[in-house]
Image (cartoon, rainbow, N blue to C red; front, side):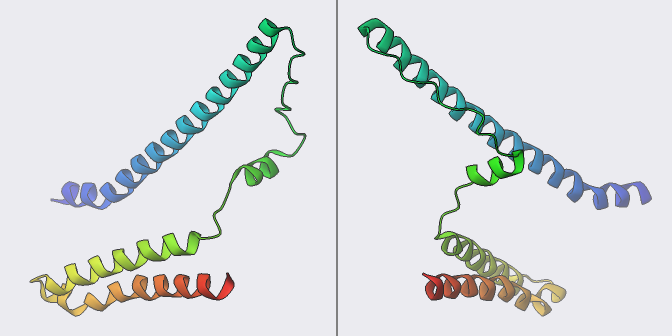
Length: 134
């Protein structure tokens, strides 16, 4: 009984770690694919220029001399409409949580159904933030 409880208590952490690792690997793979496609396009441009006898385009500067953290910040393109997307996700997640807890037959769940209202109001706050700052 004790080992089952221990496994059940560690399971969310293990699942979260696996999901986070998978997310990181997917994002990393997509970035490498984008980089590879860009290099292939540059190579094709240079080959076409060599075949036509025109001066070859200069190679782009791959290392712009910035610190790694600054390069990372420069690569991240944050949409100015991010509060709309985050707000929509929070509102819909909060509605789903509220309904699931409210419609549950468990007495404890019925008492805490209002906890789903927190992400709903945070989502509306993000909508309001977008509306006031645009």
